[in-house]
Amino acid sequence: MPKDAQSPKKPRGNRAALTHKVGYALRHPERVGPHVRRAGRDAWLRLRHRMLDIGCGNLRGGWRFIDHLDTGHYYGVDISPDILIAAKETLTERGLQAKLPHLTLTGDLRLDFLPDGHFDVVHAHSVFSHSPLSVVDECLAHVGRVLTKTGFFDFTFDRTEGTEHQVLREDFYYRTDTLLTLAAQHNLHARFMEDWEKRPHGQSKIRVSRAPLPS
Ligand SMILES: C[S@@+](CC[C@H](N)C(=O)[O-])C[C@H]1O[C@@H](n2cnc3c(N)ncnc32)[C@H](O)[C@@H]1O
Image 1: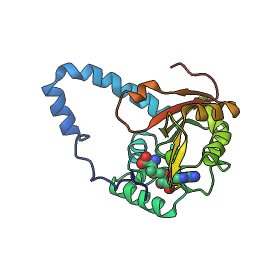
Image 2: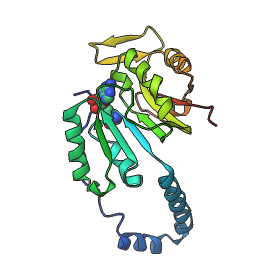
Image 3: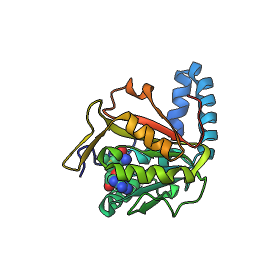
Image 4: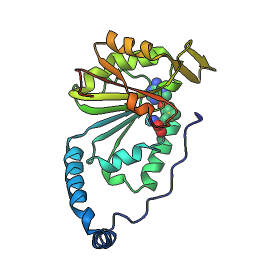
């Protein structure tokens, strides 16, 4: 089990209950307008998004996406059968069965079972930090096909400013330029996400897309 894998958390509280919402609105009437605007924007986004979560793990983070997205709009793939069994447990513990996420075991990252131009969000969190460059290369070679024209693929990686190296073939450290160059070789636009560095995540992030995106 990678060092940063976590066990599922306890079920959420009852903040979504109508009584809680009404009570909150009465106590904070000034917040109702912004909340309604945010809720409208979230509903609009929810309808649009289809997400592919590469190396979804046990859904320690993925359950939040499943909760947010429309039914059937979340696709998680992972190389480990045991992890996918744990993912189903998280789904059950979170009470998200009705969202019908797709959880698929995969032996490679060619993504050939997925349709063209389907996903506007693709995400690989804490996956390439455990992957040799050949796996990153395979993913970048194929991810463009499943992205929509305006979609993007965000991935995190362990960044080194010095010599690239790996530890026990478990942890891999890449230079930013190596990954940006690899993306360009697959006709993808890629940018290092400076704003991600401002928060203490431990890993760095690159965003790739089929066409240049506004920053
Ligand atoms: C550190 S965990 C991160 C899980 C999840 N993304 C998260 O942030 O909670 C890495 C996951 O990537 C999966 N993984 C590693 N290499 C993979 C590959 N080549 N294809 C698919 N999944 C992979 C592992 O099985 C593991 O579940």
